[in-house]
Amino acid sequence: MIDLFSDTKTRPSEAMRRAIASAEVGDEQKFEDPTTNRLRERVCALLGKEDSVFLPSGTMCNEIAIAVHCSPGDEVIAAAGSHIVDFEGGGPAALSGVMVRSLQAVAGTYDAAALRAAVRPPSRYFPRSRLACVEQTANTAGGRVWPAARLREVAQQAHASGLATHMDGARLMNAVVASGVAAAEQAAGYDSVWIDFSKGLGCPVGAALAGSAAFVAQAWRLKQRWGGALRQSGILAAAALSALDHNVERLADDHANARLLATALAEIDGIAVDPQSIDTNIVFFDVGGTGFDAERLCAALHSRGVQMGAFGPTVIRAVTHLDVSRDDVLRALDVLRAVLRGD
Image (cartoon, rainbow, N blue to C red; front, side, top):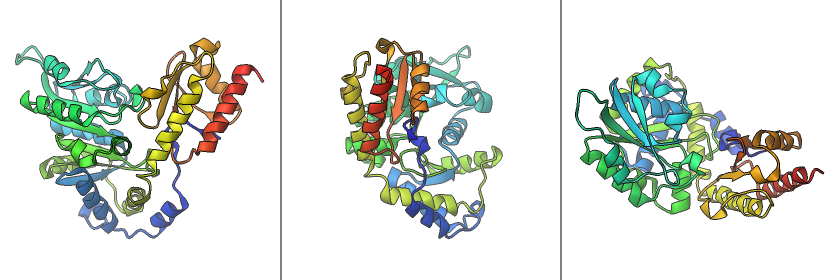
């Protein structure tokens, strides 16, 4: 199977498995796991933050951050289509009692003026605007990269308006490789930020949430309360350290493969995609002109060993990652062409 459904489909390499097998471990809850402690220190240096906590998932990072920054009845502001809006099972409302206000997004981003206009005036009738969130990269916009200048402007406006700031950095390292702007620089204006190890970096599990020491102390409390407590987590932290050592720069290969895919798709009659919009490793394309709907075309591809995801009646998403080579992309294109021809 050539699995382009998501970069969450990556599997640990043999080198990563060796790192897992040889990990030095201890009780993470007592800060006695040396491998997890090294990872936390590495993440702090990478993101330019005072402290960090290792967590089972990026979704837990987002939900813990929202709960630390907000009180019940508060409002979070985020781009329409972002992960906290559409893909966390209503977590902000269910876990923290907060509302989410979606801003119209352009290429997955919004600007300082849009944020300023969305902030509620003080009134007992309104929810209190409390937190501004950004998602780097913007998944449902096709992995678009927030420009560093826009990140700074949004953070400055949020703080000027009395809001805290949070960066969903699920694919932050993709943005670093694509833009050449260091992770710490991108995250500088954000009170909390996390990175995911289980997407393009190739780990089986895990993410790390960072911020001030006071923020992380509260994050630990929620990690415990919500059942995310870990013990000998060095087994997982070793994989993350291996990923940071070996799997960051190679994200450029995924980006090149995504552009290759998009360029070839644009040449197929009935498929609509803009190769110039591909910043990183995510390709959305519309197959409405082919006579197929997205579900039927994905099913036909799957039957021939290629997996993609339907994201609407005629829209398909394909995501490149370390388990998909250039040759795999070319083969997937051949299969797609054959399905469309009816071969």
